[in-house]
Image (cartoon, rainbow, N blue to C red; front, side):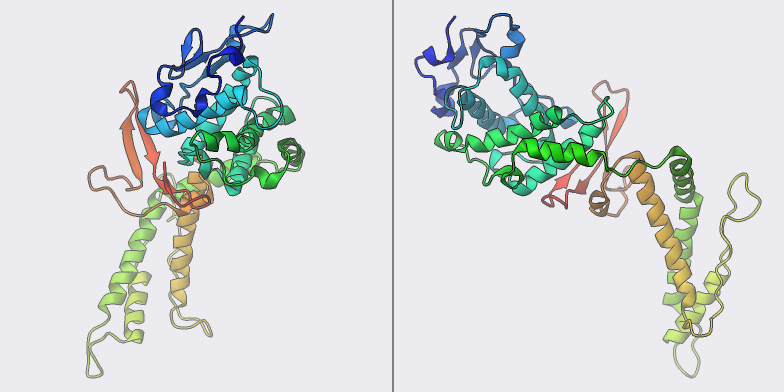
Length: 372
């Protein structure tokens, strides 16, 4: 059976994009095919083991074959071919290793898409540690009870291979990774650290604790949240208007404004929730307290606002799984057309039967770029 090295031009990854179009990677596959079905000279191995799938499914219904990902696709094809024909460390990989490489790439590319990485050179050392965190989190969600070192190593090793092939990539016109991943550490050592650390992870909250917290948070973001917004509006309006003018002035001094706001807040009544016999919150105590200053009641309003904010964060993180930096990246405002927060976008599902909601934020922890 014909081997890769018997091709007339084995190092075709050095050719220009135009010249690569008609190049064969095997007797049955072209460079631009959605799958590379390479020759498999190993007896007993299925042909699938020598297959690279480039139709990698990405978030939002995209694929690596879509035009907007053409640059990354070209770079990764050159990388994989260089592993077969131009390895910079060790021996050339066998074609039967390609199914494993394909899985490793699919995992990495999916993560790159979620972080809006479009090129290999964007994968610096900092990004590699973000990828480690992603692997640790997603690996912990797998069906087995403990994280396997081999599973983690496979997903980390692809970054090491990308860096080791920097010379081959550079020669083919691809900007390589700017620095070694994982601070130059062996990916197997990093994998061991992750799996050892998993044993020391803080366990999730028991249902007996988490459910009452989530229930209380969801209760607060309904009618109570509306009440707190109204209370804030009442306070601000009264403070801005001030009191009636007299011979001492127009009624806009700090003491007069504060007293007007105090009276407005004192008259505010909180709502009674369905099925309850009393308002969900007691009236705000607006009486000045000795040593507490004239506007001590404002602290109670601020505390209520922070309680609603915290309840919103709990609901978002418990139901959607947002990181706190992603919550911080949300922009305030209401979309006048949908009536929803302006950070939300609605799109129909592929079948048209469902509506999918996308949350727009910033990946501040990584590069500050907008993400969904």
